[in-house]
Amino acid sequence: MHDFVIVGGGVQGTYLSHALSTGMGISDLVVIDPFEQPLAVWRQHTRACGMRYLRSPSSHNLDLDFHSLRNWAAQHGWDHQQAYVPPYARPQLELFDAHAAAVIHNNNLRRWRRRGTVGRIVLHDDCVDVSFARQRVRARYALLALGRSTELCYPAWSRLTDLHRDVIDHVFSPSFHPQKLSCAQRPVIIGAGASAIQLALATSAQSGRPVTVISQYPIRVRRFDSDPCFIGPRCARDFLAQSDYTVRRAMIETARAPGSIPEDVAQQLAAQRSQKAIRVLEDRVQSAAISGGRLRLKLAGGDSIESDRVVVATGFNPGVPGGRLVAELAARYALPRAEDGFPLPDSFLRWHPRLFVSGTLAELELGPFAPNIIGAIAAAKRLAAFLLEQSDPRPRAWQPLPRLLHQTGSSVAMRA
Ligand SMILES: Cc1cc2nc3c(=O)[nH]c(=O)nc-3n(C[C@H](O)[C@H](O)[C@H](O)COP(=O)(O)OP(=O)(O)OC[C@H]3O[C@@H](n4cnc5c(N)ncnc54)[C@H](O)[C@@H]3O)c2cc1C
Image (cartoon, rainbow, N blue to C red; front, top):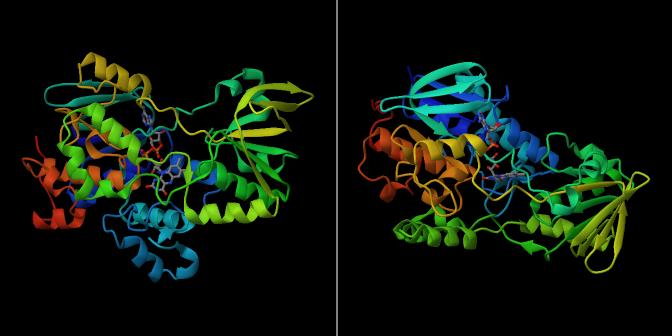
């Protein structure tokens, strides 16, 4: 029997496999993911939208030490000026990925991976059975680290199947490649969040042709995608003190800034707009019709736009991630859920005595940052506390993970 099986080997699953094996002495792990390479979805999404710098600081990286990325970059000769955006040293995507690859290689994290999509999890009193690709593994505990990648949000007007196939893509669809948009004569992007605007900047730089961005909302500039106050005790205490989960949900919504862009991207956009390389229409697409391979978008304001390639950058569906797997688990074992259907895990992130959750599935316990890299770090602390048999991990939630591990010895015993 394995100690842990992690379902999903993206940013969260890979980080948590590192934290459990390297930081907590767990020696028998399995990470199940459909992709051979760790972080496959992260790489696809960040490249698809032409992201150049992360939105999070360099301290949020895939290693267990907050300083790891910066030290590694200095040792490997990365030019400091190019490698980071101030004020919080947000790293270049290339640097983040190179460091992540080194962490994965140096800690041999690939050895835990098995390829497949988990279709069923059976929870027993003393173990779990996880089925994937005609195989079954048994472990003491399972951890769901599923992400949201399969739940793309399409505007209603774009869902007509015949339009979809030829002219409309979602920026995060596996079939989308930025080259498709760069080759278009009249590229149009729907949305005004970081993925839409970064894609517009990349497309205009590559194609030299004007790019049209259509957004229902004015451009919103925010440094981070959620209020970082919740990472520390100042906001986290209030969040955790709240026992009404509809209030917690409201706190998460208020703290988040979906569809916003950081300052440096806003500056680049302003420069491109002044040169007429990008135009932003604040309007709503009402309907779409196709003729002669071109799409005509009718806007609520009365205008019409013609395009040979439209990319919607409208993010992910907001519901509970994990599709049938999570819905079935919740129903079969009557697992606790909030009114909005999201899991209510305990303070160790256990949704069931044998099942942990991380990422978006853990946001009602961790807070607005749960889906991000720092969310994986926060989840690791709760797991460490569980393995150390702490009575309540919350008061220590904002201590750095290495300190938490150091205080109690670098290796924690596996609980039966
Ligand atoms: C464009 C973009 C930029 C971002 N930038 C930042 C940033 O700068 N800083 C930051 O902190 N966060 C950022 N984020 C948010 C977040 O860190 C990423 O979305 C990250 O990829 C989330 O990690 P994850 O492991 O939860 O999901 P994913 O990376 O999507 O990984 C989940 C994995 O689970 C697999 N899976 C799903 N279901 C199953 C199943 N049933 N069986 C087996 N495997 C399964 C999926 O195939 C996938 O490989 C960004 C997100 C996007 C989209």
